[in-house]
Figure 1 (tube, one colour):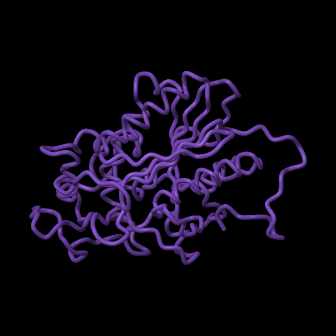
Figure 2 (figure 1 turned 135 degrees about the horizontal axis):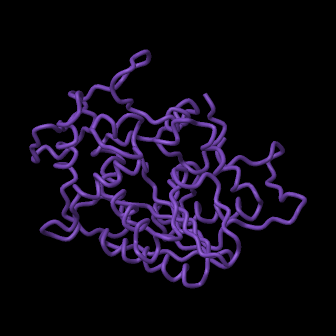
Length: 317
């Protein structure tokens, strides 16, 4: 199980002294809302230092959130902190997507660059964006459509409102794109139910967060001040190893549903999730078990292109 306790149910500190990998943990619940929004189903950011209590923010717009996260990271870098920052959407697609689009270079990076080129936010109005048009354009470049889901009043030549036109690779086939990444197939075998990055609209959909979020993570990764100390896991760094006092930023995909979150009076679920996940990551780091969660991606060849969810382990085929 992800974030697994010891067999007797007790989380134990190792006998040796543990040196944590990070000094700060940033967890982000992203939103693709087309209008500024607060509260439920909006953007929540949690910042948690190595000691002390978590602090949360609820920016109404993606641009405001991006600026706030950049500011957090810049301040941490100036203090010489090592920061783990995670957004709650897939950082890559199923294997073969970059090649199917005719993109050259490292597949994950090629897709990031293409989305950064195509996706426009604050388009006309705050939070207005062209994510459905981008999905339609990308579908039009594929042999079979992969993206689906759009508002019924928005008509796009290569994007259906329903899951009626897409076709995914089935077992035994060599050509085509899979509906699921390997890490998601692993979770589904465990009776957990992540949604596909191809699904753009509807209950539980995450595809629109991917389209609006990857360009943000790409800009943060490549920011002139942040880029020199930034790496994306597992593509650029398998297990973080920055020394204390050496500024470092590691971007890692998270999925808050990996942990149980109680209903807390006065908090919306999204806020509670980012707090609980940041706290859990700090606990794992203090216990010396966070390193193993990073190393888990190395069990999968697919992770080199598809990425991985931090906290999922024991999924070797």
